[in-house]
Image (cartoon, rainbow, N blue to C red):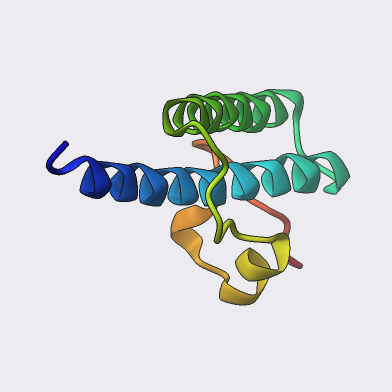
Length: 98
């Protein structure tokens, strides 16, 4: 089928990107649990963002039919410090030490 390899490659790239966003959201949940001064509403928003990203990732993996290679690790996100991958709900402001 023409284009199916390209479509699969695009789906893999979307899945890899979704995994990075999911992992960033997971790290944000963990951060909100350990930071002092994070109120319940902010923590709930962070958890909701994580849940949405998890569902999107699961849907993409199901559509792809396998887990692609090249998924990010926590250390990749920490080392890269890519702010576009961080899942911050509106109104979230980490303490000065972050």
